[in-house]
Length: 201
Image 1 (cartoon, rainbow, N blue to C red):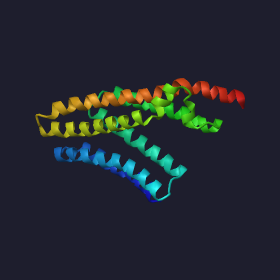
Image 2: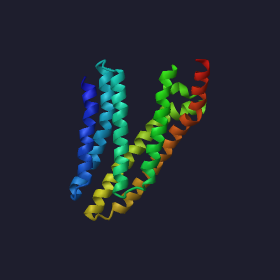
Image 3: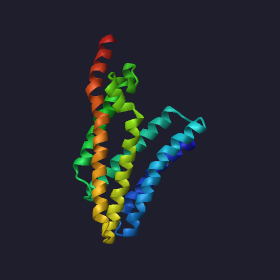
Image 4: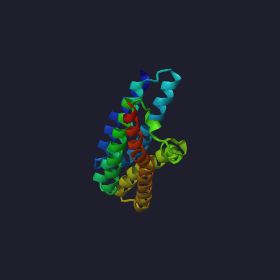
């Protein structure tokens, strides 16, 4: 299916972006900013295309989530390795993601939809509300793009590099805050819900 191919094509593009970031050319590094934007927009486009063509499927959903995780984790790690953000940022994101995904993966085996792990209003709002999901995506995308710009500008010796880097740091920590806000409710509420499901089975 075309939508799945678009999803999978994000991985080679991610590889190109990483290669350009590690080049010595300021121009190559700066080009990664619009490429990262394209990478993020492809995530939206594949979903829209799948729905428009009636190609939505479990496989497509799994591939989409896997591609999202690969892109996010890889970029955080790369930017930390380039010393643009503290190593604590990718560590928090990776640990949070590992635990939340592990807990959610158990839910279907217990006959529970992942979102149904949230029983409180606050938990449902933090995890499922587009009012948080959309800003989280925007802040994360902004952080990635600004980090790439800051790196290229610094290599270029441009005076704006420091200001852009500061904005990128703020956006990065904002993304971490959103990440924790949407992940902690799963870790707090899910064990009780899964425990109740085990007792009933």
